[in-house]
Amino acid sequence: MLDLIPKLSIIILARTSKDTTSIDPTMMYLVLSLMGVFVFFLILIFLRKTLIPLFNLWYIVLVYGKFSFEFLEFFKANNLRNPHNSCIRDEITMHFLVFFKHIKSAVFYSTKNFLEYGETPFLISYKLLVKKMGNPECINITRFSESKVRVVGYNEIFNGINMKSLYYFIDEKFVMGEYLFSDVHRADPDNIISMLSAKYLDKKEIISDCFYIIDPSGNKLNYENNGFSVNIRYLFLGDERINGILESIFLDGNTSGLGFRKAMKHEELLNRF
Image (cartoon, rainbow, N blue to C red; front, side, top):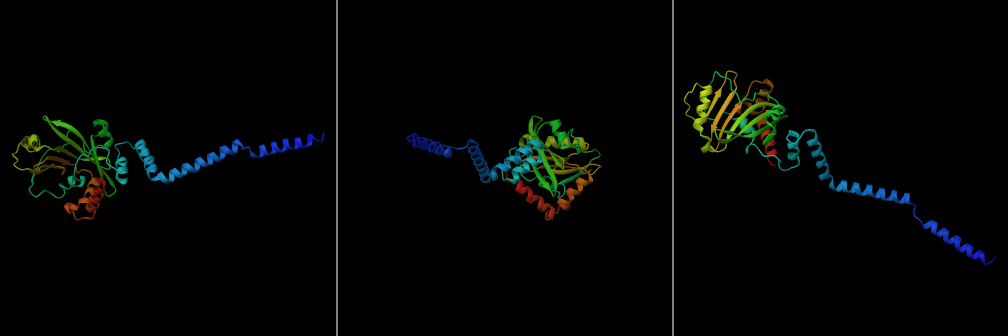
């Protein structure tokens, strides 16, 4: 009987030792979970500069779309390349400027007919244009003060010649159209001038590489052959609010104005992508 006491003591001590060294599974899972959360936040801290912009881009695409102003401004803000083709190589600002700082060699004409840009009415919204024409094949954006300015373009065929048809929007309203022929030699400028004269000037002879046509409402057409391309621009001036925005930027052709310099600086930043 006395011999059993030491044996029982050894067994009890062994069990006690085993029980004290065993790990509770619940506690183990808790520790692993805390470690996982810690590692997750550690990753977020190191990758926040990459992950946060990606989440922002995902949100912009979901809410506004890939052809939205917000989408393109995201790339500008993050110094990224524009994922879409650009419609023009220079600044949007300069395409408006020709109507406020007239080209010195230009000739001026008046017409009794109202200027039209194809079958697209002025002041149509950007959404309606896309609904009619489909997603644009090129796009550029800038700002005139706080107003959003966007130009979108489509490739078209005119008399067997490739050209771009460009639509300029200020705060989602179509205010200027432009036909761009990038190959002067194939464009046949004389034929283009003849058609413009027949439509607006009763077939009056025009001998000039640059001229303006003004309609009864004050809307303007600018034709320019600079030796490299032919540009035909149509500016609508029938919206007082839009006119106020343009005047605040261009100040009747004064390129030293604060509004113009701010617009150019902003667009220079946008053109980095």
